[in-house]
View (cartoon, rainbow, N blue to C red):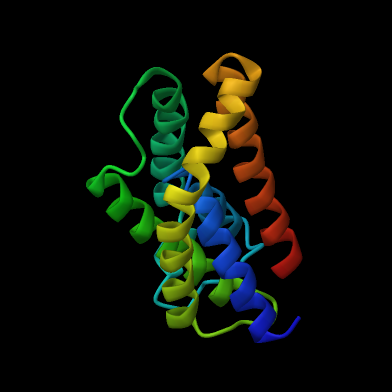
Length: 159
């Protein structure tokens, strides 16, 4: 896989970070912890330790629950900033941890950009799906599955 393709996948991973702040980075952290994404020896090596992966998992689980019970919009400024930061970590993790690595700085930039685009872009899709299904919960669960499945697929492709 070429570095350009790896960076394109870092951008897609950032887009998937738009709907969820912590689930994508938790998956990247566990992938690094298990050695599927080799970030050891890079500035992102700390992400592969079990403690950050466990903490990010707890945050992801809290977010997955909170998404179903709160009405706060994902486009709220602090949420956008958090998604951009986590998108940067996801993009960098994908870029640096790939079997054919790409520059981590570019991965971080593309991951953050993807998250900033994906956050407002996915909200109308979620709302439309909820209207079509008659309830928000099924739409939220479908969105969760797309995010988790998409990040897992990207990790499988680059590892």
